[in-house]
Length: 304
Image (cartoon, rainbow, N blue to C red):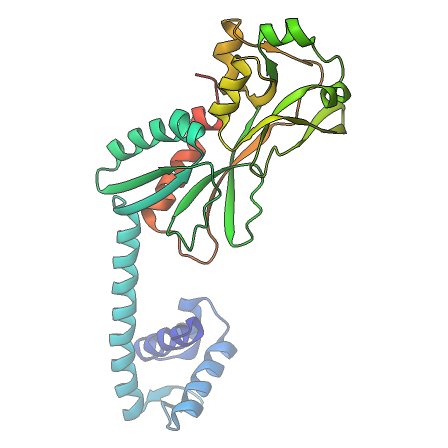
């Protein structure tokens, strides 16, 4: 039943109660001409007269009385259902949530947040799948996925959670042996540890100033879809890596890695939470989305 039809039913019930079009229209905050039009349309659709009009008053016909009684029952049922669903939405979220996240980011940031979330929402159950593969939300039955990089999937809705700063790093032993690049272009002559998924790939970009970026095509002995692998290879002196600040900060402080080209920062990697575009977002998923958005650790992607 459309909202217009429900409004017409409410008007007719109020018309029977108030006894005049002007009073009923005033109660519902509509024009008297609109009220008269709605009743006329009801009569035309039903094929019976609901109201007898005189110059001084109106009288609800027998058919109109029967219609009004049924209208009251319908409106009461609609109002009761609306209250029940509203109460359900305001209650403690319950149900199951299936989440996908990149391995390292999921371990460092998503898993700790979900531990707090599940303690706060004991009626929610969750499955956290850590994978650096871009999962298909609909086909694989995921309610939510964390993506590093701008989502390319048009079948998903994205909510931005953070911008993750990145650092260009290498081991001290690598720099001692091969030297440090002085410009982004010199990276083309260095072995680089690339990421095989969509965001980093074999094209690294660096800022040269406000609104200016330079793309650099890089190559190296190893490509992996796991940031931990690239980190370990960089520690071992295999090449140069472009990694998240929160992943390399401890190694930089411990002098296990050194930062290269600090004056030419790479653009930050955006972090998104995505849900299937075609699916209703259930209460527990909404609650988790809100928790992710509100998290200071997620928003800043602080190093651990």
